[in-house]
Image (spheres, each protein chain N blue to C red):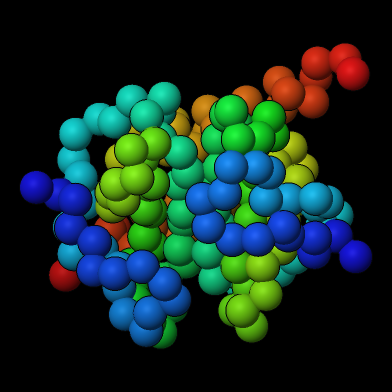
Length: 84
Length: 84
């Protein structure tokens, strides 16, 4: 069901067999890893680790995926804006 | 020298002690992990794995860091644009 993830680690092949198509609430996401394409895999891969420990492959071209990434970075900005 | 990384894994604390301030060529980056702030750490953390295996903490608010993330996502777009 779109959660297809081959294995973790720096493998010499693609990590994602399929991507999760439904929206995932950013609040349930712990971290997002963006992997460049390269000799190991021709696709850019986006793997989210959810707060419950599951790992989910996301579609890097999906607008909501790009929004999640933007929102994480935006939070970093507002963190530094707060006075010490 | 800004490479300070506490340890990998889903630890219950911040992973980055300091962030690398100098520009890193996107070509030398294998993947970038964005970790949300949360109870384990009040900072948004951006950790890049370089192609030589080193892990580097990056400053999430630095414009060049945001550009690197954008460029990885943009590559995903151009991949899907190419006809099969």
